[in-house]
Length: 347
Ligand SMILES: Nc1ncnc2c1ncn2[C@@H]1O[C@H](COP(=O)(O)OP(=O)(O)OP(=O)(O)O)[C@@H](O)[C@H]1O
Image (cartoon, rainbow, N blue to C red; front, top):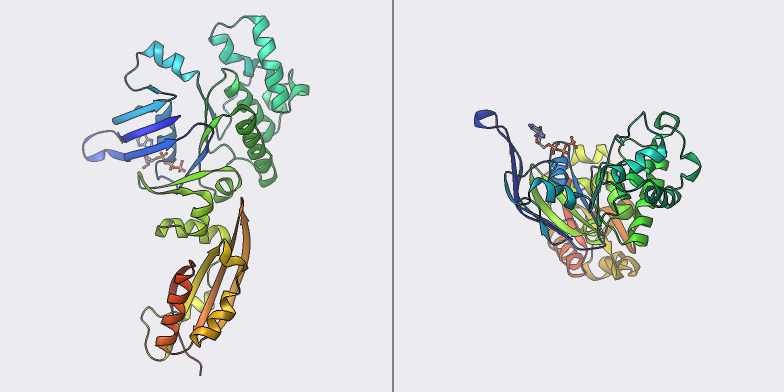
């Protein structure tokens, strides 16, 4: 439904040029919810704005619903944009128009008749749960209600794709959850393809099927959400995950960590496990089979969509050969093993 081919975007020219996107390839099949996550300034907004050409890429091609957009005339592009709805962090409603008239606006611009507008807007207000607010003005609404109006407006032209630009970043956690639920509901009921950008892992965890990670204008990792949360492949992916799970070693331990092992140290490992490994008594087997002791420093179990994810920070206690054997054993059982460093043995 969405295909970005080798998209690059540079703002300005000469020594002050800023390259916001570099050779981005991205595909989102119909009906999928795809999240793009990255730190501030990574290029997320530029990327999503390239999909409907609010921002024109410096090079590359943008395909939406089988149509290549960068080569279209202005008129044909405007028509193609009816199939692409968009919502924003700050809602962008017209304050002088009622809720009904905000939702009706795109239809008025398309020349739809008054009667048909009524027939189309009323069920949309129902869909977003705002039937009783039709005659109110944006100033009379909460942030969550304003975003519901913006969603109804984005759906008015019956788009196939919805772009969400940090749509929940201005909302409190409870309202965020209700808007995410609405987006998921729309995805199910209307089969709408959703591309969203966010800096919040919670958003990705709650509703996305797939996720791409953007760093400094480049897509550095792409995965199914279950895989990403279980075993991110990049350092930045692990940073996002550990930050989200709040599974960092205690400060006192970080201060004691040494980079290189010697005969007087034990490794500290962070273990991520999912699938069968969650239900298998791996730690007790490790102790028996590898002759090490395990001191568990932190542990938690998270449910990510249909997956269960176990996480643990532990000290592996034994001689260098045995602790290495233990690490190999864990890896062989499909655990994600990261050696955080080494601590002096107390024995
Ligand atoms: N119109 C513009 N003119 C010049 N530089 C721009 C413009 N828009 C974005 N940039 C630059 O492009 C880079 C990517 O910006 P972008 O807004 O896409 O990042 P982002 O990941 O959405 O960040 P944030 O989460 O802070 O909104 C930044 O270095 C930014 O300063």
